[in-house]
Length: 167
Image (cartoon, rainbow, N blue to C red; front, side, top):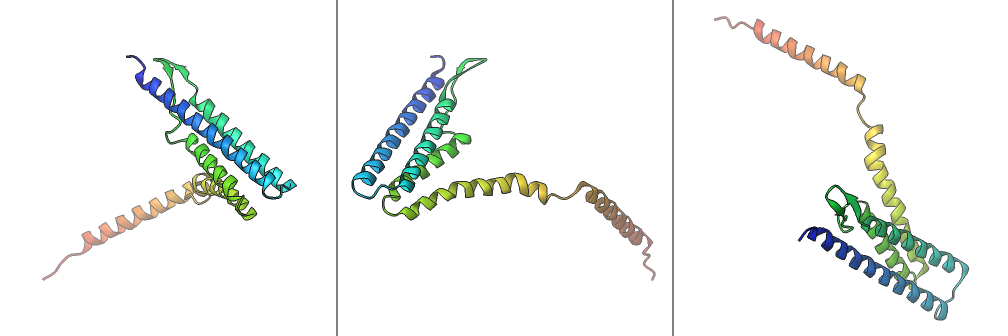
């Protein structure tokens, strides 16, 4: 059978996307019904609901685009969305959004949990992009250090040669 791995990856992607869609729709409906009928539904809650819905729609459509097959040299190629990479971050954002939807019914303070996403993005930006360029040793300083090192070694060798043991 040709393309068995591609067929399996495509089926796995479809199953995963369907699961994400059903859970997201169920949790959003649950949040809306509980917030509307049990608790007070104010303007900030409405903004938060639309924020989480927008985040879920964006992540779902991005994962759906990743899962679409593309034409390659060997025929149809399917990328597995469960592999490490950018899709992994989309899954993390989806899980955080689900957690915020459920826990914000308990207390409004759980909306602050959304701040972990920009905090993590800032940390990754610092660690991978800013820090290596800001704290990287300069190239002009390396050549002078190499010259000093060479001179020191040469001086040590000269001293070793001039030592004569007398008896």
